[in-house]
Image 1: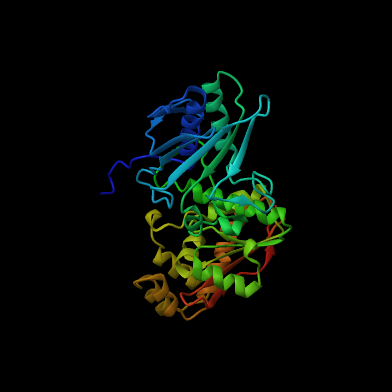
Image 2 (image 1 turned 90 degrees about the vertical axis):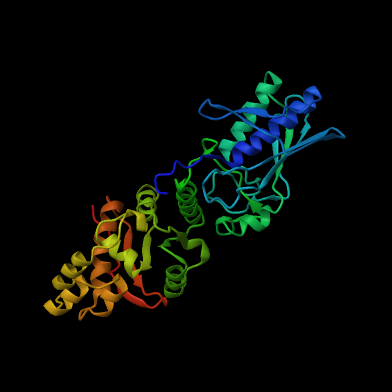
Length: 358
C-alpha cells in the first residue's frame, strides 16, 4: 500500500481558470468548449470536462468539479463555478467573490483587505487564458463561486487568517501533489504574515489542538497569534528566520517535543518515532538515577517514559528542543521559548525565554 503511486489532482485555481475560460469563450464565440483546455503556469496544457454551462442575458456560466487526486483536500469534489460578463474595452479583468468564496479582511496576505480571496497566481492564470481566447488583453468581470464553500471554509484556517465568507482560490502550479503538505506550509507562512502585519509581537506555533489551547491560555494570546504548525516546526521556524517577530513560543505534546529535542524538524510519525534510549541519556544528563534511565529506555511510549522519570524530564526536553529550534532561527534576535504539555493540556516542561544568539 505504501508503494502505491498516488494520483495528482488540480488546484481550485486551475479549476476556476478552466471554468472562466470556457465561459469567456462562450461569450465571444457562442459555444462552450467541452472539454476546455487551459495553460498552466509552467507551460503544461490540460483539459477539464464541464459540469455546468449556461449562457443568458450576456452572462456565461461554467463549472468544473474539483478533483484533488489522492490528496485529502477538503475541496475534493467541490463545484468551482465561474460567471463571466464582458466589460468595456480597456477595462481589463475585474474579479468578484461569488457565494462560497471568501473576502480578505486582514492585512498581511498577498491581497489587500476588501479583495476577493482569489490568490495572485490563479488570477494570473485567468488573465493568461482569457487573453489566449481573446487574442489579446481580455476585458471581463469574472465572478468565482463555490456552492457550500462557506461550510467547507470552516474546515480550513481561513477564519484565522481573516478570510470571511468562504474558501480561497489557491494554487501556484495548478497541480495538487498528494500529501505534499504545500497548502499547510503556505498557511503557516500566511499566518505569520498576518500576525506581523497586525503588529503581533508574540506568536505561538503548536503541534495540535490540545497544545494550542493550552499555550493560548498560558499566555493569553489572541487567535491571530496562534500558528497551526502541525508537524512542520522546521517550516515555521525557517520562515520566522526571514520574517521575524519579537517572541516565538513552540508548543507541543511530550512525544513531538521529544522528537524536536532529538533534532527532528518534521515531527510526523512517518519520519520515525522518538528515540527512547536517547531520551534516557538526556534524563541521565539531567540527574536521573540509573534505574529510572533504564525504565525510560524500555518504556512503551514517550508518555510512559515521562511517568517513570525521577527528574523533571519535561524541562530537560524543552531545554534541548530550544537549542535545536534556536539553530534554525539564527542569526538571532528573536526571543524563543519551548513549552511541553501532556495529553490533558497540563504544562510538564518549559525552557527559559532566551534571545537567540548570533
